[in-house]
Length: 150
Image (cartoon, rainbow, N blue to C red):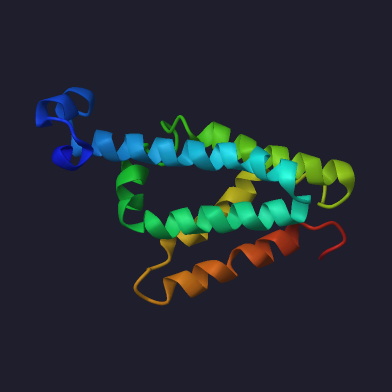
């Protein structure tokens, strides 16, 4: 791994004393990308499109990282110690608030509830039609958030 990164093994272990530490840093980096993506999409698209695109990206990330989900979950003590959790929920909250303000989405939706629904994509076995299954999950979530949708 160090060789592929172009650094010596000593340098790698100086920054990441365990493989778990390296996996967690990669996880945090990827989550930050998702957090930063939400407002970027908001500038270029209508809100419902933003939600669908962002949820699709969260689903894609979940499929890619399905093998490390248990390691991350255990290492972050089921999110209590995860410094990315608050900002990630905050990114969802910003989108929900914008939708409630313009009447596109129902008011008062808890962003943590939305994250729980999105969490399904992290539990899909990629070897068992995972891509198709993950592609189907965001749409009903978005539909359930829309104002006037029961």
